[in-house]
Length: 194
Image (cartoon, rainbow, N blue to C red):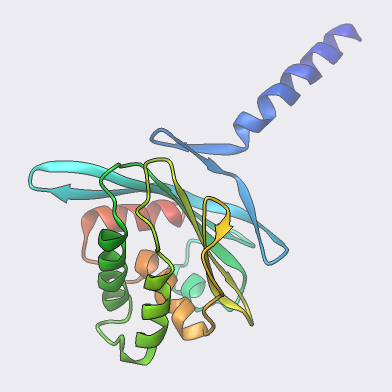
């Protein structure tokens, strides 16, 4: 009986470690709550950028859904709670670099048709008010009927931006078929749990 108690204590002690996924040096949470809904980690990976001949890990990310899915288009199209957590892993990120990357991502995700969501993109980019530091965490979440929200280190950065079409563009940044960056395609595969 004593042995069983010791085994149970060891399992309880190890359980939190088993509940997170290690991506590079980052522990990516196994689950998050979005709009009162518990979401599970679908997949996680690193965003690598190549600058000259150097590969730089920019962030680790996790995609959170109600149910596991490897179908990128169905995730993009779903009017369901979901989220992306990004853990900044470089000291070279700035709000200007982030907003430039978002704008490029929206162009890719929409097939260069950003005109219908230009206002939403401007509101989204305005949510990035300060330069991130290594170790900062962004959470981009979608709640049906409310829209896309952004939190930095658990603090809301402003009112949600409504619209399913905008939500599709946001998640299309990571999941679109239009992505032509090998490193971003690697992240996409990891987010889809492949």
